Image (cartoon, rainbow, N blue to C red; front, side, top):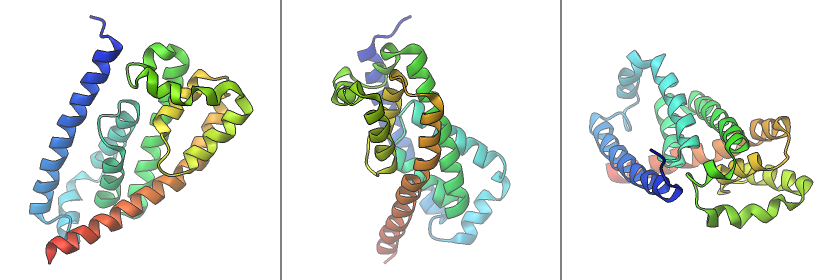
Length: 201
């Protein structure tokens, strides 16, 4: 059975809602366990998940980049909360970079027919003019990957449609992604701690 592009996007929207509900339930469950407010309880919870936990998390990050049904901010925060600032950053970085590489190859191989299953034609057209000058697009792409709040997933797919060389794309992702991942991760981490401290009061 061949799904239309509109149907695919609707299914992604429904999946996002379901994932959001599951995440809320899990957060409540983990909060009641005390793992957000007690470091020892968190360590005990993760004690038997030292190998499989990071592997599963990296896989989740890869999937959420390619099939965006989990809000990126939530998964970034999850990595830092559960694995600590350093390890969480590393797992976030690995998963997001791999997912970004996959997006590039999927867009390059399948073209717009694949992209329209993920995002609408209107969304893609907002940025399509950027690709008229390849050298200019390369610089714009690098700046957007480096800057927070840019539509990274859309631009990664768009890059696959251009004549950008893979190694140019590779080094932009590898060198620019760490800064935004770190900025998002630590902002979310300390922001969530502040909220939890208010709730604790």
